Amino acid sequence: MATQQARTLGRLMLSPTIILLFVWMIVPLAMTIYFSALNYNLLNPGMENFAGLDNYYYFLTDPAFLAAFRNTLVLVGSVLAITVVFGILIALLLDQPILGRNVVRLMVIGPFFIMPTVSALVWKNLLMHPVSGLFAWIATSLGLEPIDWFAEAPMFAIILIVSWQWLPFATLILLTALQSLDAEQREAAEMDGARSLSTFLYITLPHLARPITVVILIETIFLLSVFADIFVTTGGGPGLQTTNIAFLIYSQALMHYDVGTASAGGLVAVVVANILAFFLVRIVGRNLEA
Image (tube, rainbow, N blue to C red; front, side, top):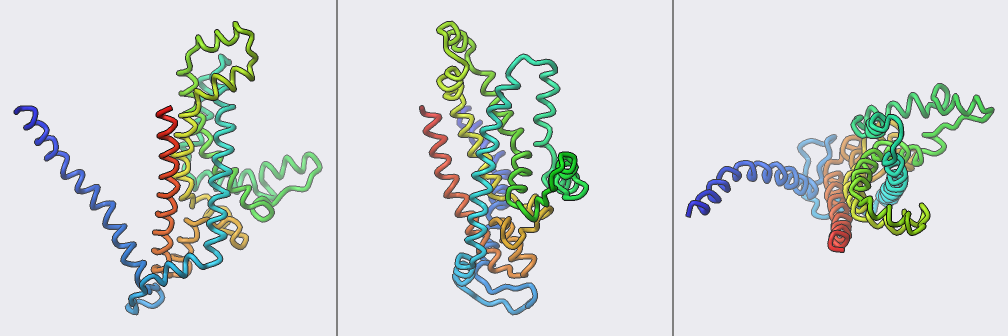
């Protein structure tokens, strides 16, 4: 009886928080759905009218959407590949007994705590600037022609910036997983004459399967909404070369002032993110059950 009363009291105490979170999530979603069904342009206030599914049709058939969708997949896939591969390599290095290991670990993890806007500004003005940037100085010192990164290779530049931000996260997760690896397995493999590559392929890598899956799941969710890096550096250009879905929605809302189409695009982005998350969660579940 007392246990039942305690459970009831606990539910009552939690209910205000749950209701607040529910309202906090549902109200913006409901407003987005409402605006997506209207012809609502900020340049024509008071002239809103019902549009039905026209905004969705316009957004999905716009050639810019196909380019943005392709750029989003390229950005997410490239960053995932870079962060996972180099995250494993750096985690393996930091797992070794090297001088100043704690300091090195702190320096490696540091970029993850820098705001995306600040990070993008540093890369744009201090590293990738075609005249005064560090990369331009290195190229000039070697007798090479400096590269105008954001004009000649804009998507590659964005991939480098975003990968630099998320590499510490992958490294931290994978390093934590490496430290939980049973040392007796490594010692047994060494006693049996296994080489370092064989030990990595048959012992270390299978042990990292679950952490790698978790890294992919979490990073994908956040990488689908990359915006600040693109806004600060390329502005979605040149043309549509670095425009992803998030930036396309922004341009529809605050550059073209078309709130209706932008709201429809936001809901399309939510559907795409949920579809990807569904398959990734299934993959995570299978790895956890294995």
